[in-house]
Length: 412
Image (cartoon, rainbow, N blue to C red; front, side):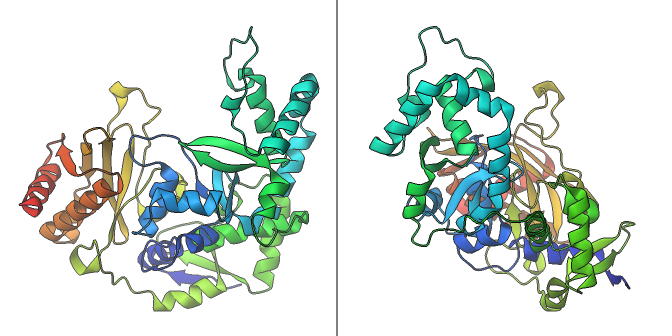
């Protein structure tokens, strides 16, 4: 089969459109349905990753919107993607194979077997009272705690029953999980999601389609990243290619074979990077992305397609950090141009910009004044999203000084 050739510029446009980071104007539900998952993370130096990811695509989004979609509307549920995530309730059945795996795991069986009375009490209490949290149960008097498997027995049991599918996260309050019977949660969804166990082929097609739908273009490593049974997945991919559903791609300056859905390539002819809102020169939209954003989670993909070597330094010793504890990538138009490390001081309602790094190339490829204006505007919007009414720039490199000046002039 002949490979279609596309430029790296067009490849980036396809990716950003498929990520809903270009001209998307839809709802939060549409975002989650399309992306397939939104990763949950507990780090709270700025707004948590799941809220940040949705805000980047839906400017009117608030964290209460997601809480309502999850806790009240039951349109999404919490479970594993590559990490713990919010997933569309319509995709529930594709989590069933993993739930079955947890039911077969010996360590999970041991937890339930060694705590039979407590398991019975927890089930009885949830049945009678409704959703419960781990904090609703006391630890044994001699309990010392430690790592995950040394958490108090009630927490371990709740988690195992949740992983196995008997329980579901009903809602969160102050980020604390509340567990309920899955069947009762289903009764609140209106139309009960399918619980038909998918075949291996169906499951792998689902995962492949999620990558195609969200990345737009992908090589084989991208497609098979989260899939353990690569033989079955490769067979499904070959069937999709043979049916003409997937087409081969050659991307400018990249050696690997790439793939894309035929429909995505056909629609790529209509891509226009013309935006309103937080734009710089030539309508270049600026985003501050979460490190756990669907766009950024595959660091090697970002490095290949955007020539951006992103390092997340949260787990790097402080003395060895270059970009900051929680540096967030900055996207301008189709270029990833740097990072911003910020902290929301919620008591003083101040966004503290601890580090700001922009590469030298933006000044060469676009008007610096327009870029500064667009980045400053986005930092201001990011500040508001984090509940802050003022911004403090602690870093003082040339870009930071120019942006700080612009922020001050906007306030005057």
